[in-house]
Length: 377
Image 1 (cartoon, rainbow, N blue to C red):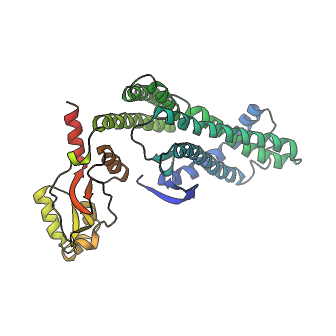
Image 2: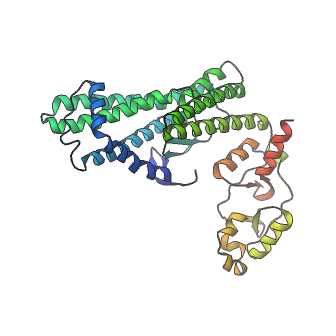
């Protein structure tokens, strides 16, 4: 996902952070810290435990606790996504990464047509893990109240664990709302898909998800809640994108790359001047060319590669200076849905087609879109 960077791996899965999270953590820490006394009263009433706020509300402690809780919340989101990922991996689905964002997390998986038998337990796994974390944190809050003798110090632990317990249980409940593509919506889609074709189940679940999105948007507007408005926007867009992706997979499910690719392919050499490539782009209206050296493909040169070079230096540069060397390729017998998935996942415009080490064609995003338009007729 654009705007994200990797921070490490958990259980072999790359964990990435989106730049929005860097905004969210200090924002959440400030919100939690500025409402510390009100929140302490709510938690005290909710759990039936007195919370001594003499330390909790003193000095900068509210914002320290706010920061800890903000990090704890996103740690809970990470565990939630790991639960999804581990169930999916156990069912044979490859997990590309987990990305944490301002409104939650996304597990990127190699999956085209969802299998209801896999999606149902996978969708349940995240909320169940959130509930488990919430129960554990709530238990620690009660233990702190019972075992920590000093009431002021006990108040810190009760507030901290009680808040995290409440947030994770809230995460469990919120994710079970049948607003596709949230977990509850995916559970609904999996249930429907056992009774009707997948694309019909997706269309119904996406429609319900859009309905919830509109409802959240209206409520968010009426109570002036920007977070609810943002959630509504992402649910609506996510439902629409998921429905479109399933529709495209249904349209393309029986097609192979060989039937869509363009051949023969116009290529360039590593020594071709960038000015010549730009001229070719103007003339041929193609914005990317495979790079061939001694009969083998060694890279690809695209408009984005050329733009990465300073304009003042382009006249003196050759293709080898800016070309992409790590190229995603497919064979001619690969399903066209694989090409669509790779193009979308990697945000690229074209994939060279290789057979027995030789370049035999190229398939572009435009080629795939054209076929989909024809199949919709």
